[in-house]
Length: 118
Length: 112
Image 1 (cartoon, rainbow over the protein chains, first blue to last red):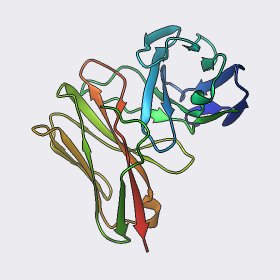
Image 2 (image 1 turned 60 degrees about the vertical axis):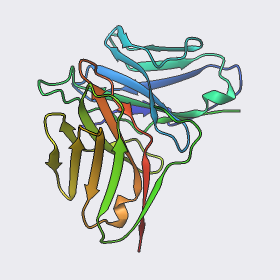
Image 3 (image 1 turned 135 degrees about the vertical axis):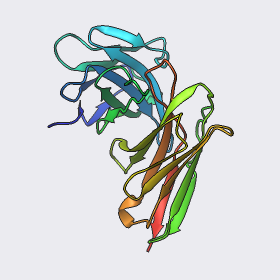
C-alpha cells in the first residue's frame, strides 16, 4: 500500500531551466495539494487540485509556476525559468476527497522533492 | 501571520519527561486542527487531529488541547523518547475550505 510518491527526490537545475516535479497520490485519493518549504520554515500552501481541475491556486506565484493533475498520470508542478529563490523542498499531499462530515481532512504527505537552483 | 527567514523555536527536554508544544492560530473560523511531525529530510507525518467542537483528544502518548477562546492549540507528548526528536507543526483548516494552513513549527530536541 504505497503512500504518496514524489519524484525526483532531488533535482538540480541551473538558472533559466525548467523544473518538473511529479506526485502520485495514495491509492483511492483524488485530491492533491502542493506545498513549498524553505529551510527552517513552515510549509506554505501553493495549490489544490482534483482530477483535471485546479480548485485553489491562491498560493501559487503568478508567473513561471503551473500545476496540473490530469485524468491519467501523476500531478505535475512545473517551474519555468527557475531562479535561485525557487530552491526549496516541494511537498505533495493527497486526501481521499472533501472533508468528512465532521470537517476532518487529513492530508498524507510524500517525502518531498528538493530543488536546488545553481 | 506568516514569518519569513526566522529560525524555528526550539524546545529541549530530558528523555522521559513530558513535552508541551504550543501553537497560536489566527482564524476564528477554523473548524479543524491537526499536528504533524517532520523528521529531518522527510515529509510531515500525521500525529493527531481535533475538531473545533472538542477541547481535548488523546492518542497513544499524545494529547491535543484546544482553547478556542484564546485561539491556542497544544500538543503534549508523554514520556518523551529520542525518536520524538523532530519539528512539530500545527495546521488549521478554515470552515468550508479544504487546504491546511501550517504554523511556523517547533523543533523538539531530546537530551539523554
